Image (tube, rainbow, N blue to C red; front, side):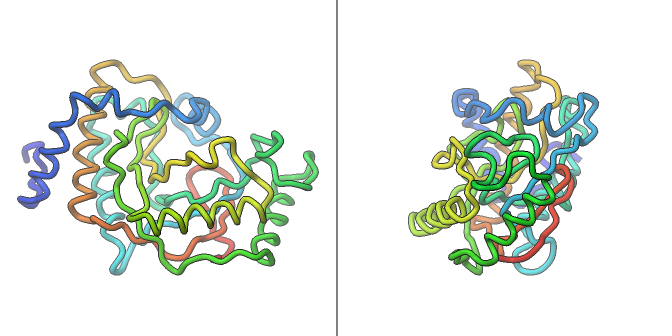
Length: 260
């Protein structure tokens, strides 16, 4: 099979149009939000590193009417190991595919603002998870039954730290809803990231465990342009279900405690 992957006709041309933007892609790639993420979350050989905490996310549906985005992510997962830069990437397992809505707290970062308000700094992460969960269960938090997003075409999907499908709210009303939700969760949980108002929604594909060469960077950007176009063609609107409060021991599994 040729590298055109035998897309449906309109999907093929969408990918071609996105690839035409590649010359501008290096300028579109946003700086890494946290270049230490890969080293905190993965060992240098790609094995997953302990990185415990809590979060509010939406998993991608694996079955049913909202499963098309998950199927596209599976295509990427199948194709990526054959790429020349794959050995430098720690891929996330498909079972973990999700969009983070609110970052919560992690055992690795107990700085003021990053650790929940009024939780002792020396508390175990298990105790922190319990307290955050109780605050979300009892606090004045309302959550929608469905969240609608779209691929953010202004972001290349590569930031020197991760490869990811960048997302944006489908319209201004959805953006306002998500902003209000994130503010309310921040107030209830007692955590506010320095980048709270600049957060880029996304679905992570994998983390870079070693820097890419210039050629590998060009190839990764070309792939991301193609994969974003494919996602856009198949799923112009990406639908998620009700937000979930999850805890995790590492980046390979996000365990739902309850729906919000």
